[in-house]
Length: 254
Image 1 (cartoon, rainbow, N blue to C red):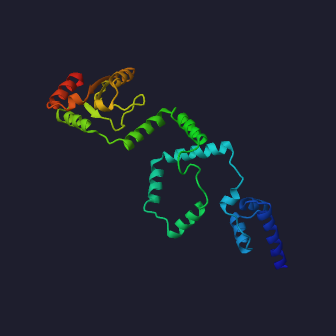
Image 2 (cartoon, helix red, strand yellow):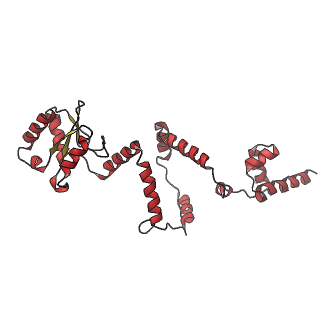
Image 3 (cartoon, rainbow, N blue to C red):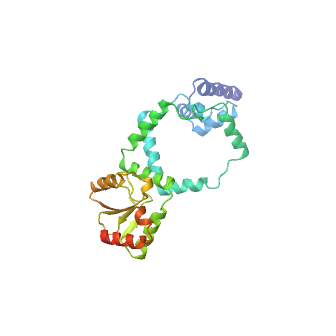
């Protein structure tokens, strides 16, 4: 009798799990058992268990659930403790040879349509639309500009280093922000006044800037009430560059 009951349980479980494709949790709810018990029965009865990917196949979260999951992930990513915990958890971890071979076998036969060359226009348009939407957020825009400036530019430049030294040597009230520390209207000035005055210093080489650089920069910053002192190669390459720059900066806002 015991064997017969066990056999019937096996048939019932096989039908629910394999044929009806119910999850372990749903079967546990129907049968009033703990999910771990159902899992153990599947194992004992040698009923092949589905992987998580197979169990989730064809099942999608609702739009509301996806939004909740997205917001939850964003909030976690902003938590310094969580970020540090994630960093430490991956620190020094290396895939074993077996894992590398497994990952390689998964990717075999799968190729990205733009692996060699640029993405298709449909994909490019989608990426563009998403980025434009995200750039409407002022906080995100400034964060991205700062990251780009830090990653793409070698800052400070040789000219900027000279002005930094002059400001330190003569205690001039300007600090360097050209590394992305200060963004206004999507632009990054080189130096800003320390004591709250709306004054910028821009240091540049004429070769790399357009003829209208001074005018466009002054007009843009002027919309926000800032005045700009421009120092170019004619100042910086002069034999007496230090005296020239010191005099200009002192008269401007020192």
